[in-house]
Image (cartoon, rainbow, N blue to C red; front, side, top):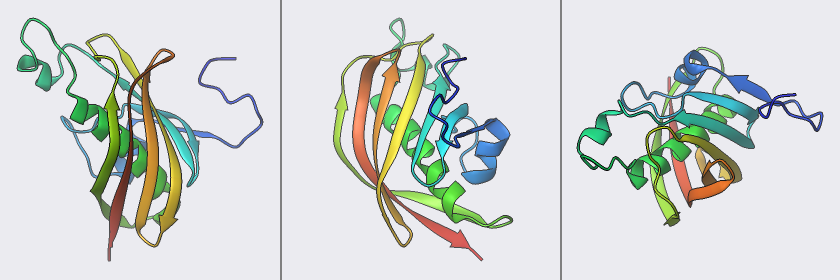
Length: 158
């Protein structure tokens, strides 16, 4: 069984790029989640971001020593969390925008460089009306490279 397959009998789903794009409004070059390998509706998700040298931010961050900006790692976590919230809340045919509200306790533990694969682990801490709070960890292999607690608000368009 592959690393991405659930082994505990839960009803986890996977989402490809087009399914992610149907849920959140982000698009290239700012869509920072390539796929979701585990989605437990309304609760948790594990997203994947394959970090490649052709990312636009590497041109200036930093020439000769490319490092993924920490704020973009947090954004990738938030986009993964947005998938959790939108998948749980939106009815088919609806559209919505999602806005960052807070970022707390952000920590950056190790640089992320081209060739790394970020595994974006997010867990809902609470949801009240249209405001969701998550904790997230970004990992490369088994190593936590960044973590934060954050909240976001979504606004459904009628």
